[in-house]
Image (cartoon, rainbow, N blue to C red; front, side, top):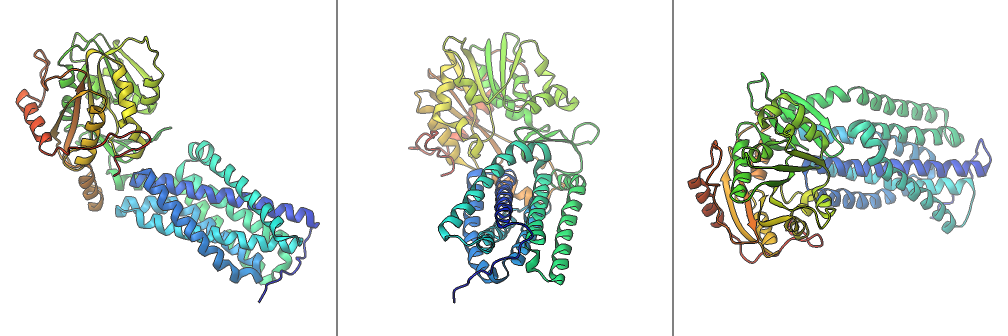
Length: 532
């Protein structure tokens, strides 16, 4: 049986009515894309590996949109009411999705099932929009199907463009992840409800109008309540994730920065970046001593630190009185600010960032290296204190191209020190880093030291702690490289170190070599190999 839409009774001329429908398509498309981007962004932060999370969200949503389009065929006879119901449910699901995902992660330690469920639900609802809107347009003014589809998709695609640009440049920086999703839901509900209750009110019985008005009012009330509760919710969720002693929680332009412990809490200072532990005051000295001091066994008047905005690697560099200058290149200005001003972090880094020998630069390490002029003075030591390899945003910082840029900045006899993850938990990743550095003709010396395996947040769920242990391992692993063959040793004249000794360093090299994976190919920008 062929469905033939009945002409609508409109309160305005057909041309204006058609414009209002296309304007609603524009708004709904913008909101739909914001929901998609919000799920991808939050999942990348909570779960990690942005490529995988984007693939999961987009593939599930596209699949679900096809299902939604098929299901919408049953609603065409009551397209106006069906569209209003779909938009109300979509606004509620999309608006609350970020809060629900964060809650699942904070209290249950697992966000992926919720991610898939919301992607599926939102995709079905978005897929149902187009057939219903197509029916409504045809009811206003009959036209050939090709022309109607062209108009509908033009409005849809332009709306998607606006939503895609609004998310990173307006909603995220101004409103944040949770409030931005709630605001988008409110706009979505208002647009869908207004279209039907005003333009297509002639299609509705009195009872349907009141029911639809009540449903939209309830959705807007729930979204408004969520907005009011965003602050307390975030504080409670952070305590569930990080423990009760969160001192600083800032969403910078780059990442979420959280400081816990320190002060009078009785617990060591801990620094988290996007939910990942970067510094534990209880054992960070083992990591930073192992990263820095082997590289200082040679010329070290000019030193470059890539990353390390917390000032802790810098602290170890400045223990050598003959260091003349140090340049620190850090992407996140918030981390640099905390490294200079937070009382506990400055106590830990010995106020290193205020040393007159130090010059700080806020920039992406890759872009900064690429932009250096050819006649720029080289560095005796380059230290890469960067996020772990295998995390998608940092893949380019462990590429052949990046190490080529770093090698060009080395002075004769200079050394490159690289934090390369954890060889115990991810040997393939570690040895791929080593193979990538070696592919440039550099001589390498891999080594590892045991971490403290500290439970930095006992208040966190057991699921979350287990996931961290499985992901992070109990060791820190490094690669020391130079153009010449070099021994792995500590400087003959060095400051007093808390844990690293020549004997331990020799054992660290032997421990790393036991897990060597030969024959690995280098990782490049065009073929990153850390996810394999």
